[in-house]
Image (tube, rainbow, N blue to C red; front, top):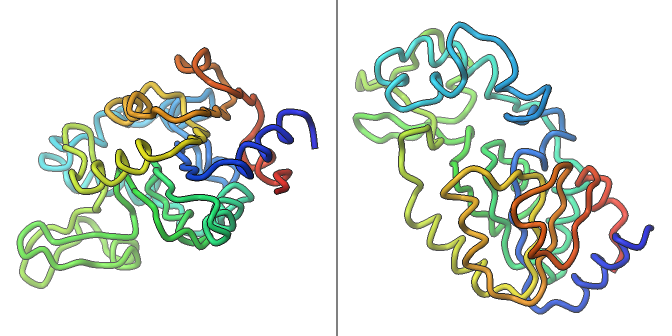
Length: 240
């Protein structure tokens, strides 16, 4: 264990209420590509840019092409939780972590055992009919062809927040309450450039802010501890 991990372990041990805020980098070590790195989703070439395909207007106007991309590039249901997911679930079980706030849609925190998870951008594991609101599992989307439809004839939409859509107010309010009540906020695997999620840090008024990310962020100067390592490797070494 190096000095940075020792300090992080000590901060978690001494904190009364710890909250974790994570982005795509938390899941890259589970084999799920992020969006903005050199090898990320936005650096790859498609008929339409990912930002275009993942917009609400594209879903409405080009639904079948949306699903061609979505099934091919947004569903990684074979991915397994890594050490970061597993350690966070363990910390929650031990009463050392009060909540996980995530920008990811892969459901890996829940797979690892975390229970109090605020999914800001929704989840691939929930899908609903836009007409009758009936919910469908991920397996239904995977097995369907073309545009998945409900028995009522309605189009089924993933319960994920597309560009041009609002975040769920209940999820946002729960996440903000958790962050505002924390005395230790650990932020990992996110560039903190995507709003409104990145703005959540402005609500933190606790004692210690820890940033774990491969690249620099705009909040580094405000952090008590900055760690430039893969997040799963950091959490693998945490000892309380």
